[in-house]
Length: 412
Image (tube, rainbow, N blue to C red; front, side, top):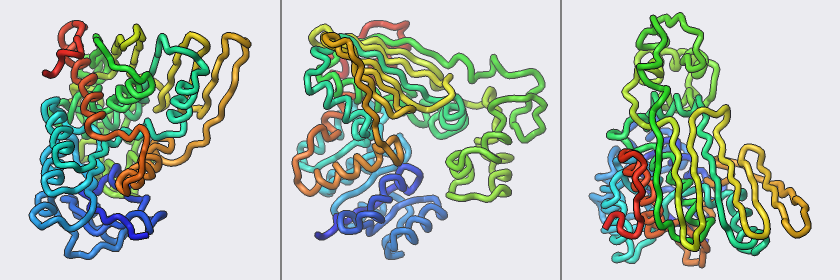
């Protein structure tokens, strides 16, 4: 079997999470090029995937300055650098794996979907949660009719307090103007999940939320701008705790490459964004938000995103006319309650890898889809753009005191 030839644009954490499929499945996927402005990441990717140095490029523009030279392009750049490269890829006839969100602009999201359809290319958006064993199992239970007709869904995204401090207070997604709103960047997964699991269109929604804690109003007295400036406060968000001996992911992001030394981490914290006091950053994205939705057939759903949880996980309860599904990704368990028998059935989910198996799951589906196989529930750009609108509408509602947004007319 001839492998699909791919170019990676953006060889950061997300790009590498998808690219690793090529190492374990060399007959399916081969990377022949990379475009990455960060020298260390670019060279690491080149060496890891044995790419010809002539195809080791600095910018996405260089990729498309050539005639088409691969089958697919992976676009894993920052949120505000998705639109131009994906439109260039579509124009040249590449199929695309596009990191979410499509774009921070609803108009651009719809443009990508329309351009892909008009050109006849396949653009798959990385809504990896729908590819997890957890979500696939829930979807299969719903489709079986075991819980009857869905009436209500309550879905929680537990961001995790340390994760929020890292990514959404100090990190790349802290500021709406520099990336995208929290509901889009973090929770477009969840809007996609809800619409997909329910299987109906959302008719209307309203939303509330704010940045209530990670702001200057809550800054302790005498706290310096940087934790490394000798902060006297015993704080759960002290970078000297979170990064020096903490998550390897936190450490590698702070430095900019994998497996950094303690000296490299310490130097990065003294000068870079991850050493700042969480109460004195330039962040503006919310740290909690709720969205209330009404779907077709009278189905109601509540989505709640909160950063004030000890773990990064998702939990969901789906209530039907004949039973209920309750699941939590942190425990890899699903409980199905049957109203007729009064019995509960426990389903253990075997998941491994990034995003609870979603990273590997989307790669398997993407490869099959590109090869022309029928893939149910693929998250192509036309579906994703529609689901993105729920995020944009929720953000508009939040800024307008929870005003109800009618989805049929929204974005026209």
